[in-house]
Length: 416
Ligand code: CAO
Image 1: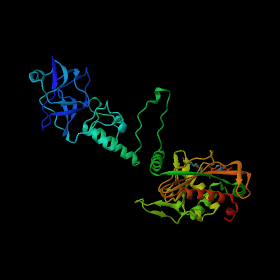
Image 2: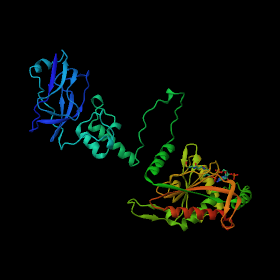
Image 3: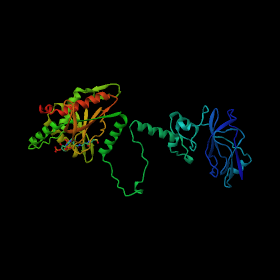
């Protein structure tokens, strides 16, 4: 039997409304009370339910069309098993329309240019309106309602996740991918250190506006000096690398450029300049990256720093560091010099505001600024990442220029 769905009296003095959504297609099988259309009037938005089980034969209206009370909307071939069908056939008009979801001013459908085309999206007018107000493209939300309809809960869930991602509290969800479809795979669990470090790095990367300044220093003389010292201390089993010299040079820079030794306070309105110089060193361990801190590094000699670096890095690798030994840093040095590479962009270690990344030295040509000629030199490439909310580019360039000069002058280290 064929039944027509006709627009009933909508009440509240409404005699017409605009079709904002058609939730069924020709050939669809529907059940009694299933919403087939959503209408919007000057005063309200409302869902029109089917009055019968059956199959959609014709859709007699289109999106955007203004329809009037009594107008034919849809024809349905009713199913015999429908219990309500017989009763309602006498009255071919729906008895009720779901109550208006909310009283509201009439609004146009979402503009595709603003938030993407919404033609094939099923969502109530209230959900559409909120999405439009917040500039959310409904196409990217997966609806959990009937036929993929985007419910209010779906939208709220999406908003909640976006807020958590932007505050750095969670990572953006990755879609589950079965990589074994394309070849053999092996799954390795991340260590606790890797997971914690990963969260911290992600938060730092997302919340701090990073800029990285690159430079290099002529360390030919410094390297000669280091080698001599290294040989001298071999018997004492103290390994002297470039790192203690870098730390010494850095503490001098921090005294000259105090803003690099600061932190923003919790209100983000004040800068706390620290008059102590605790240098964190990034240590690569089998279970992940750790950053023990050399306290009062400015007061320690090259030998003392060497011994402390050896001790801290050994204990870091053996997971023997105490929690307190990883706290209180004011600036971090991350040296990949023992491994290789020419420049990299280190991520700031909050609440610090800058970090120095050191790469492997190499023999190359460098213009001597005083002699104005190219010299063959042992060059140390380094990168300074800084928090641009606190440090200006000019200050960063001055810092790296001065650091380069400092490292080029071995006599500065001979004093210690
Ligand atoms: N240029 C050339 N050679 C360098 C160098 C540089 N910039 N830096 C170190 N070397 C040399 C050292 O002198 C040493 O050689 P010698 O034995 O002949 O003197 C060799 O490389 C190995 O040094 P090292 O790496 O053991 O020691 P270090 O003091 O330079 O570094 C430590 C110590 C703990 C920082 C380092 O072992 C480490 O873990 N680095 C990795 C840090 C890291 O992962 N950072 C990335 C963070 S961001 O993801």
